Image: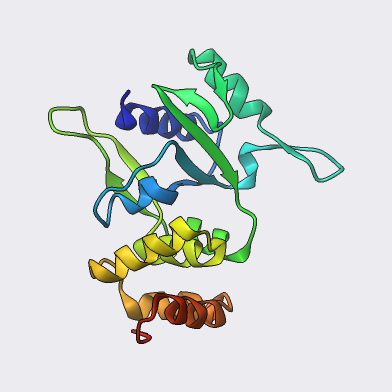
Length: 184
């Protein structure tokens, strides 16, 4: 199983214009900023132009699924499309925060030692934290705490994002639950 190769396949989908704007999200995005944690899949936030749109509003992954099959990746699991041994999820932009996160994504080299260079777009640390706060699962709150403990987030930029997306009340609740003084 090669995470870098799985990411490389998605980069190739973008190069072929099967998907538009994309960024690594979730736990794998967090790996670029904080100590590793367990994850079962790779999440990619993608613009809506990668989806087949129906008049009902339903979004289907038809174009992505066909392109993956042509590349030899047709297996699906309950977690996503199996690419190089990794379940991969394609998450559509669904909010202003997602749009902001995708627009602000940074390009990183995700190749391992001795591997050919692979550059991929990844959410910024501040957007990983803001998204985790919005989702609010226990593992997301633990991820926020790890970013704070490891000083891996720019607090000034994070505050601006939280204010822009009306997440300051959630931030205050997080600080209370975590029993920490508000660092913002």
